[in-house]
Amino acid sequence: MSEHELNKGGADDCQIVEELLSPFMDEELNATADAFVRHHLDSCGRCMKKLDELKATVEAINELPREATPENDLWPGIVAASPDGSLGAPVGVGRNKRWRMPKPMLLAAGLAALLAPAGVFAGMSLLSGDEEPLASSGHNWVSDDTGAEITIDLSESLEGIEEWAEAFAEEWEAVAEQWEDEWADWESDNEYEGAELTALLSALQDEDPQIRRTVARTLGDYEDPRVVAALSRALMEDSDNEVRRWAAWSLGEIEDPRGIPALSHCLMRDSYGEARRWAAWSLGEIEDPRGIEALSAALVNDPVNEVRRWAAWALGEIEDPRGVPALAAAARNDSHSETRRWAAWALGEIESPEGVDALGEMLREEQSNEARRWAAWALGEIESPEAVDALVVTLRRDSYQQARRWAAWALGEIESPRAVEGLCHALLNDSSAEVRRWSAWALGEIEHPSAAEALSEALQNDESPEVRRWAVWALGELENR
Image (cartoon, rainbow, N blue to C red; front, side, top):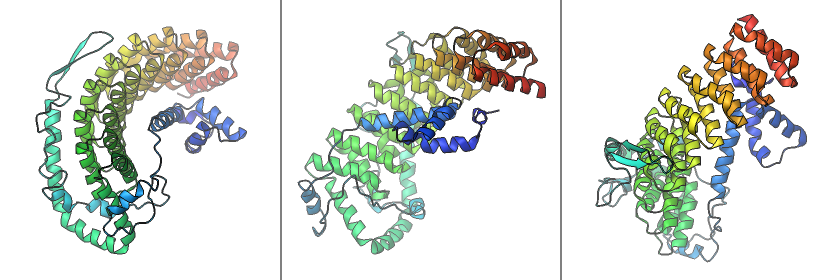
């Protein structure tokens, strides 16, 4: 029985609640709807996780600088860059109408400008030059908390990024001719939009950095390979920190995998922490495994806490086991508690048994309450019996109620009889009704007859109606096994 089935409405309730999470967080629901959502969240771990993710996303967006939409004093510079100077109205972030390239064109898209010597990626080697990348072969990283030294060899990863960039340039050549024909047909039907986009792309090279910043942000509304190329060039070459930051953000909004080489380059090479941070976020939005090497390097090596935190999040979004070594290292040793917490979450998203040891260490040694909570949740997602002992100790001894609650849930997901004794102890002795309720649920999931006595005692004596209700359900599961 999954956690979704704990709700009377089952999966239908989850779908309804997911649609209501945003207005719920903004306190826009009426009393009835608000009560419904709160009741559902009390018993549904997955929906609670979605609420936490939504809050984190809103928090990140709110941290972006609130620059005004281009006013008339900026627009003349953009109009002047258009071929005939005919554009007469500003195009800002708040545009209601935006052009989306049809999917068939996206599948066939390749760009002649990219293939020319002046193009962004033609003949480009991401790791050439005199600069040293953030991640080098056999780099040693030392935790500020423990002094423990970790060595991760990422030389093969860096070579992989360079090889991929060269291979991807070849793919563009293969589709360029088909794309040019389709683009010519599209431009003939969309003359105004084409002129507008041409003006914006030209303005991205304006001498005024404020204009370039505004354009870099606005281009996030355009799913066009020329935009990806221009933003990639700005991300790697523009001298203004904020232009590069907005270019990274827009590439994440567009979610085109062709932006991965520039984003990876930025994440490993850019001197501006905010640009690296949003490069990490964008790689997570794109969700392509080709971003793993750069994200892993940033998670292990980057000196900025927020960059490492978002690198951990992005690896969880990609959900590829190749991200586990860097995530495990961060979960054990990163000096930033939020990075450790998101590393635990990411390990749970990936669901690889290779993350169990690091998560178990977090349960035993982590000082952050929330990090321990997410470590317990992640172990439940992985469902490895090797985690039972660490979870039982957490259930018995952890001072943080939410860590014990999620330990009980995780033990129910793993369904190992070795957890029965610890769950029975929590059911009869824990001070939190929520922990006792989830202990009863977990015992019903395990379906071991030795739990019958404790469940019967809870049914007769527990002061919480919810605990007694779940004790009844669990006893029914034992009888039906």
